[in-house]
Amino acid sequence: MALFVLERDVPLPAAEAWRRLTRWERHADVVPLTRVTVLTPPPTGEGTTFVARTGVGPLGFDDPMEVVGWQAPREERPARCRLVKRGSFVTGWAEIEVHATGAGTARVVWREELRVRWLPRLFDGPLAWAGRGMFGRAMTGLLKHD
Image (tube, rainbow, N blue to C red; front, side):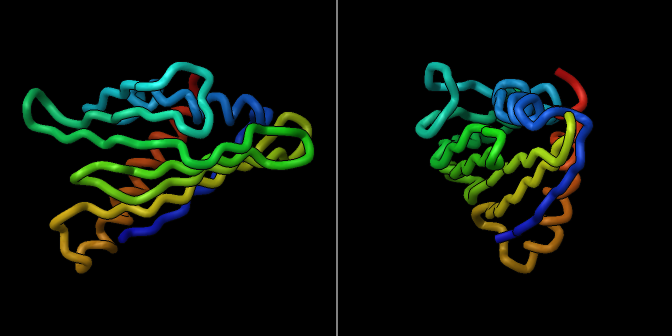
């Protein structure tokens, strides 16, 4: 599995950064060739499921995910979310944390472990590199625009 960690300090209150990162359907706006369908009714929390469909026409794959851990933001503690990828092609997990760092600022930490079925472990390094690039751009885009 390819593990990577992304960190950003953002000029947003922690609650706003959290809201932007956990509006799952918005991820489609910042990840090319991807559509996101949330399968459970709001509000988002433990048990929420959604599918990211990546591809063009019939060439693509589904990346179903489930929120298995959810700690909403509070002044005294960071917000945390853990997702499990339950696909037949992409598996792994992701964790998102948002920490308040001062007056109207936050630190975001995104950890992800990816596995692409049938891809030999020899490719874990390049997969982590690609994941850092793709998810780093996505994270920056989500935090920049509402």
